[in-house]
Image (tube, rainbow, N blue to C red):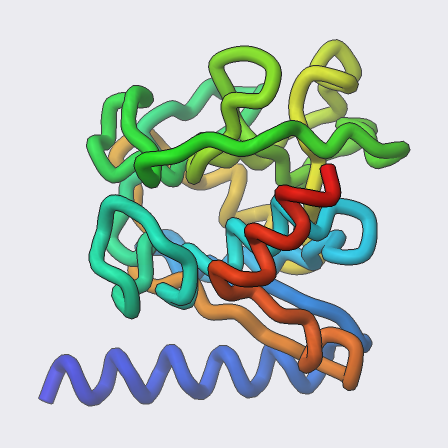
Length: 196
């Protein structure tokens, strides 16, 4: 019964959230602290967004089973007040990933405000599954980390997240024809990886 109520509340929150959003591709991070809705910059950073969405939906190969949503249940393993929250590591210690790496997509998107979604990495072209969301502008990260989205709802939740909090479910929301047609499977990833 608890599981049914939980699933119903996730569905209800997703439907209500999508009713208020403009055309685009979004990620709803349903955390134990509440929902964070992020608009994904799929036109400027297609490879990064394909990777993120593909992992979230289980359509991208990873060291987890294909068809299994990658981010569900993962903890925010690194939280630095007035800087950022970081998640996406299946090991929960900052060293894990999906079993592969891919190139940076440095564009004109910058870490110019609170709520920027960006890829965590260990140096150039070492992106995997880890991401962070900023608490404030962090311009020293520009050119070093791929910005691929921004929080449009739930910044208060971002600010409440503490180390060990977790993502209950990461749901992708597609609104409009362009977002609906944006492919996020392994074939799309390989196509954009080759273009780079």
